[in-house]
Every structure is written in C-alpha cells, then in structure tokens.
Amino acid sequence: MGSTKTVAYFFDPDVGNFHYGQGHPMKPHRLALTHSLVLHYGLYKRMQVYRPYRATVHDMCRFHSEDYIDFLQRVTPQNVQNFTKSLQQFNVGDDCPVFPGLFNFCSMYTGATLEGAVKLNNNICDIAVNWAGGLHHAKKFEASGFCYVNDIVIGILELLKYHPRVLYVDIDIHHGDGVQEAFYLTDRVMTVSFHKYGNHFFPGTGDMYEVGAEGGKYYSLNVPLKDGIDDHNYRQLFNPIMQQVVEFFRPTCIVLQCGADSLGCDRLGCFNLSVKGHGECVSFMKGFNLPLLVLGGGGYTVRNVARCWTHETALLLDEEVNNELPYNEYFEYFSPDFTLHPDTSTRIENCNTKGYLEQIRQTINDNLKSLSHAPSVQMHDIPPDLFSLEVVEEPDPDIRESVQDQDNRIEPANEYYDGDKDQDRDNDLDV
Image 1 (cartoon, rainbow, N blue to C red):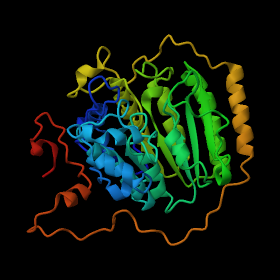
Image 2 (cartoon, helix red, strand yellow; image 1 turned 180 degrees about the vertical axis):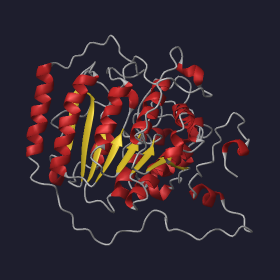
Image 3 (cartoon, rainbow, N blue to C red; image 1 turned 90 degrees about the horizontal axis):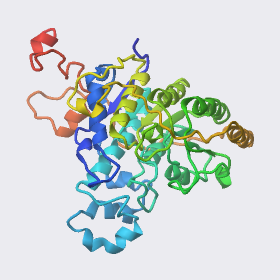
C-alpha cells in the first residue's frame, strides 16, 4: 500500500562523515546507516529525494546571535587555542566539541530543515523528513547538549511566515529546552515535550509547571516521565494528550522531533520503548493530516537509531517493510539478529506508577483548559521565501549546469539501479 501523501526526504551524502571526536556519544555516522537502509528497502522510490540547501550565516542568525555564529564559522581544531574566552562564553568544549567541518555540519542539517519548511509552505509536499535535524538544545547565544545551531527554531520561524499556529512535539528522552525557550512568550507556537525528568537528568528543565509566560502562558506543555516507561504507558499518555492539544490549539502545521534515545537500550537513555512503540507516535501525529515536518534528534545506540528512523520513514509512506533487514554495506552493525525490530527491552524498572501518570494527565488537562481559544493571527504580506521555488525553464543543453542547479532537481525514479548488475541500465529500465 502506497502513501497518498507527498513525502520530501532530505539527505546530504556528506552529513554522515563528520566526527565529534573519540569516545563522544553523538555519531553523525548513524545518518549514513539510516540512509543505507532507506535505500536498500527501496523506500526512496516513494519519495521526492533532495540533496538539501546549505544554510548560510544569515539563515542561522534568524535565531542565533551574530557573535555566536561568527565564532562557529571561524573556530577550527587548529586555531581553537586562540578562542579560550569564546569557548567558555559559547559553551563549546566537552559536550559540544570543536571538530573538523563543524560549521559545514551545522549548515547541512539546518539547511535541510529550512528547505523542508519552505517546501511545506509552498505545498510542494505534505510531509518533509530530515533525520539529520532536530538538534533541540541549542540556545540563542550558545551550544548545548551536542547541539550547536537550533535548526528546529529556524524551521519554525520559516513556517510562521505562512502558518498562524505551529505545533512542536518532542519525543526525545531529553527535554526540548532550546525550542521551548525560544517560543516561551508566544501563543503562535505550542511546544509539547515528553521526556525523562528528575535525578539531575540533562538538561534539568521540563517539569509540569513550566507552562509559558506572558502571551505564551499555557502554550508550553511538559510531560515529565520517570525511568523505564514502556510502550503501553507511553501510548496511554501520548495519544490522549496530543488529541486534546490539537483540538484546543488547532495548529495549521506540525513539527515532530523524533529523538531515538527514548528507545530501550540507548547508550544515554533509561526508557523502555520499542521501535514500534516509538513509531506509533509518528503514525498518530501523521493521522491529523496536517503539513508535517519530521526531524531526528538524539539517539546514541547507532544501529537502533537507524532501525527506528527507517521504520518511521516507512510509516510516513504507508509502506510495509520486511522485518528481515536487506543486505547493505553496514550489515554487520545489525548483528546478531539482522532485524528491523530487535528486542530493546531492558531490566530497568518502570517507575511511572498509575498514580503518577494520572497526576500528569490531570495537570495537563487543567493547563489545556486554561487555553481560552486558539489564537487568531492577523496575517500581513508574506516575507519572501528563503530561496525561490519557481518552476524554471528547461536548461540549455549546450550550457553546463551549476552544482546548485543539479542539486535542486529531484532525483529521477531511475537514479538508483536495482538489478544484480548495478550499472546495467538495460536490465533495469525500459529504453
């Protein structure tokens, strides 16, 4: 069964080659594993596949301070000793190290989120997917929690050009603090975060009583959870809360951060969700039939991150895929079972008692009732898009195309060859 929705998928072939440093839990290589599974399952055939736009300094400064972005652009492992004061000022160091190509990495994942937002605004797709994005901890003036540029905030700012109300939903195990902070005073963005809270768990924010302030009061919603929550308990909270939020807030667009560190067996996590349970949240949000921007986020057991995001790509496409993984260049990563849905259960006790979950439900219910109504927004002239998406004339065959023009074209359906003889086009295509 194929999707009736148009899905745009963004992937830069270079994004998986960055390295935070030896021993660092954040591994961009997980994006290469994810993309490989998406290709070998044949899911690319059902999507518009784009090599994304690269975000500029100007794009990043729509949220971040110029001093901070200028620092990110200039600092390198070779000259880092010249920036001692700036490293401290911008919180760059241990958790957020300076690594080769840092600014290019930020430019890639932020540009993909931004282009996804523009394509949604222009009705070019119904769902936009950027697994490299979702870096929700970055703040206006500083890096935080492995995140340097907050692509989510920048993407939402783009969506707000066309959409009066944007709903942000975060299922990473860590609180979506950077996004909440950015929109804490406005009623045009509602932020909802489901996360582990307590025992000094990073970032230490996100209790039930952080609800927004001034014009944004009650437009921040937090669901603080304890260790060991399982699929059943998570579903019992997630579905009714999100149903209520959508009914009360009436968003015109949804941004969903799908951090995979909420899975059981995550290197930095302490929840007990399965790949299927995590994916149920994605399916539930897709079911509202609103424009949807789907992003990655945390996730530190690389093989399970790739499984999770591949499964969720298939769900967004309404495609059923085999539990047995297709052979691919990273096949050995998925031993010993080589399946899409491994057992991710752990021995961590579920500390979320029935009484505690009921207390959360009741508090959130009370907060939602305090929302008088969905805010109406007087829309003025729409600012120009980040880049033009006008249909251009066919290029002159006698003039060499620029790389940017080549990248702007959608990959043809026959770009990847599926036959045993990989480059034997006659075997795969009608010519």
